[in-house]
Length: 162
Length: 360
Image (cartoon, rainbow over all chains, first blue to last red; front, side, top):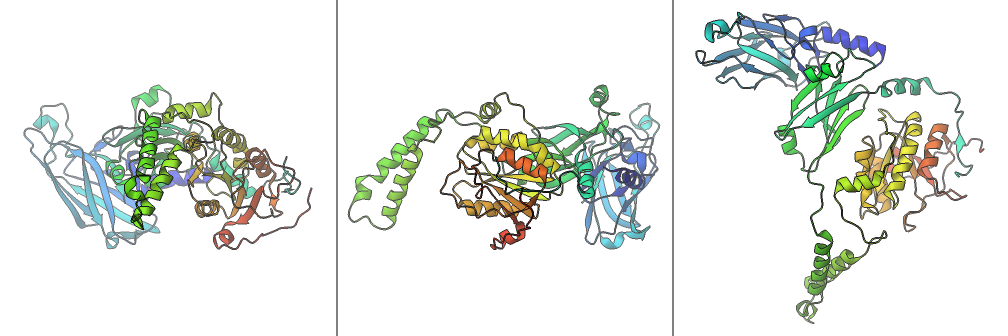
């Protein structure tokens, strides 16, 4: 990669620019380092938990897709003996695009269909603010007795747009 | 020796475009991968020269990009091995993709920026069953017996039955036909590969993102010789910005193992296909506009003959590569190679785009 391409990569990474078909990981190795995350706990090596009932990040692309795309997030919910399920609602630029009720603390994929009309044109590209509404987020200290004061609901591991 | 029909371009200077293309393709990446039985592919990819970069890894099934992922997962073992800061791993589930692919598909991982394939695995069974020679001999005997049976040989047996008997007889004779290399020893693919390498180190054939030339080589009857020729020609091919396509007629079954030795080799099997059709097939898969067909002089003379070689301004590095690929040329190498543009070849208009230059 030429020096120009390296700088471009770093610049686009800082904006969290996504490409169709490329999976990116949350955590310190990629997105958490470059993409602003609001309502999240401190990022960890390969994932990041939300901290609070709502968490959001911005997805940008070089241009607005002309066809429907699938936004897919991989992760696992926080459920426990006294926390039977997690309800997660995803809003994309204000559009409600997904709802999931997760009952098991297993790795899962949250997939939402994003229509071309949902994107906003900004800075010459496509802009999409993803707001995750997780009202069931709770502190592990209140649920399992663990020493964890974060108000968690879902562990975000990777994301891809296809 | 190649005859003086080759016209050497001024090799002292190299075009800036070629230099620029080489800068990306000269990046060396390293990586490993492992595919679990549940379809989870995990590994790592890193460029030591640029340790801060997270490489984009393309997952390819049969040379088609199935998905891509940024290698940015942290792994303790990577940090312990001083592979960057340890954030160069990746993990992707391929269960669905592999289910849809054919059982013998080729799974490859390619660094997108450099185009380098750093891992490849051929799926499916590659071993041969036990006692295969005896089983084939028994099948040949059975085919012959059936074809010569009284029922099929009756006077009133006509039409389809007669054709069936003839085809069975042909199959029996085909199975009994000894190979030109004598009694072929049936071995597993791994031992066959070992015998092919036979302690010889090979030179990697780098990936060329945008080749200027596509060299199409008819593999001969000896895969070992073809392998050594490719290994010797690899540096020159890369320097000349040329890709290499190999046509395998099946004369030596070990030729099919060459893609596992040279991951960036373009391989085309033309078992039973007419040579002209095989070359057309390869031309369709070629990525460069300029095709150079290299004929193995030891190949079957029943192949279509090449037309007179045109005078082309071939870069010196490419000429060097051609020397390695076809060393056993006669003094008259008119039938050695045909240089033609891809579009005209596919249009079945074998025009010679001759660029008359000074013959050395």
